[in-house]
Length: 277
Ligand SMILES: NC(=O)C1=CN([C@@H]2O[C@H](COP(=O)(O)OP(=O)(O)OC[C@H]3O[C@@H](n4cnc5c(N)ncnc54)[C@H](OP(=O)(O)O)[C@@H]3O)[C@@H](O)[C@H]2O)C=CC1
Ligand SMILES: O=C(O)C1=N[C@H](C(=O)O)C[C@H](O)C1
Image (cartoon, rainbow, N blue to C red):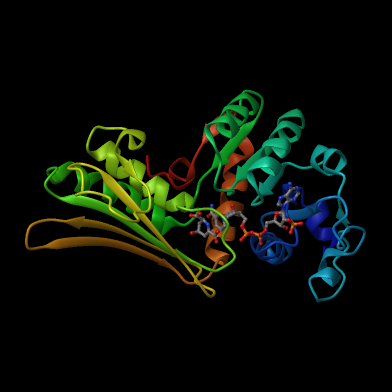
């Protein structure tokens, strides 16, 4: 339950979008327990059957005093931060409102296209946007390791990124896989767009030297697993991250929302939040 102490304490007020989603519900649970931030709004799309209900009750528990709303303009106007794990179209729309409210926008949504990123760039001229395809410390450390290993090994070491996720995931490769591929390409002084090979099928021909391949597995309730494979002659290096609890991502997102409170407009990522340079 939201208590008056939380409100009076002046803790940053956070609105969660996609409140009924896997990440939305996880964020709400953690925010209700937090002594550093407070939940001030829970958004769902118009027509969703949770709209108008207390979010605690909708999630199967006791009332917490926050009603699920479909009025993004009103909710975001009173937020210090918006935490957003939804879909690319929704995230672009929320970015405009969050910029107008001069609130911090923490974006975990993956599957964003170049055109979506251009909208986010424009919004970040007015308020901070912190975006990462993965909010965990482990993956953000792995990005640096991937960059280093790719830089140390020659092109005769083939790089493949393999990821596994639950059956409900709608985008592939995962946002994390693309970040890891980007880090590997950077290590080689190149852009991923020039090296990327999507999932293979049929008569593909032999592997192109220097390319970076992607494979995705979908099934069950896998939270998120990523391997970066460096395959050489007679040996292989595998850098692996296994996420076993999506609370990990929610904690990272809340940390980002707090970190962003004294930041000016601009685009930031989890390396900034975690001080990883
Ligand atoms: N960066 C990170 O660390 C992580 C990123 N993710 C990413 O977060 C996103 C969400 O994942 P997850 O929680 O598992 O997905 P879910 O499908 O469980 O939740 C998504 C939520 O967003 C809502 N939503 C989608 N489109 C809109 C819209 N146009 N307007 C309003 N609400 C909308 C959905 O509502 P409805 O059900 O009505 O469609 C749903 O409540 C994905 O892109 C995923 O890859 C996930 C975990 C970690
Ligand atoms: O959809 C998910 O669940 C996840 N998505 C993110 C991604 O696309 O990398 C992060 C995490 O792996 C879970």
